[in-house]
Image 1: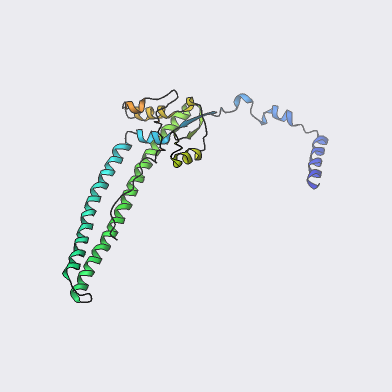
Image 2: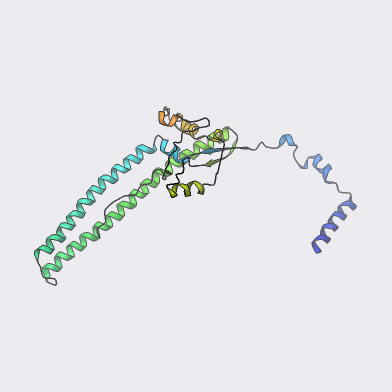
Amino acid sequence: MKKSYWITSIVGVALVLGICVVPAVSQGTTPPAAAQPQYPNLVAVIDVAQVIKAHPEFMPRHQQLQDQIKNTEATFQKRQEGITDKQKKLEAAGLRPGTAEHERAVSEITKEMTEFETDVKTQQRKFALANSQIMYDTFQDIKKTIGAYAIARNIAQVTDYREFEANPADPQTVAEDMDQRLVWFNSNLNITRYIIGEIYAARGKQVPEQFAAGNTGAGAAARTATAPPAPGTVTPGLPVQR
């Protein structure tokens, strides 16, 4: 009731004073319609995972990291085997537990195991950070390319959408497909192929055939019965002595 009273009072005062809102608009308080900025009003869709895989710098850097991981795994595997051999030799030596010689051997093996596990964890973290840097650099370049492409074409929003065929025999693919926020879109809104083309053009390179092919609207994304994992994910399988 109180709110209604104040609204009525304000309206009454306005009428008494002869205040008119419409003429004020015509006097220049609000810019004329022709002066209003033209806001972007188009939307587009892109499969970022496919663009990452197609990025000319992503795969070489990713493969280089994978090679480093394999080499490091081999090195750590030898160290692990060396520790295991020392444990077996200690057991075969028949040294009585509690003796100075036995305690010294156990201490050396324990120290070596501790250093081994520390080195493994350190290397795993280095690989994780290296992978993160690759993904960051790639995604930033893709976002920059999308931004330039969208601004030039009056596109207001670009939505990520994973293109793959859900398989009812694989519950995970069904769940991932249902979890996507974008349920349907016209294929003409797909700019995946065009963004890949822009990325290669910026480097003066030709788009590889497997990424250049696609449907109308940018269908460079391969459709598969299995939902694609996040590209560039690196899980170092370095052994850990237990």
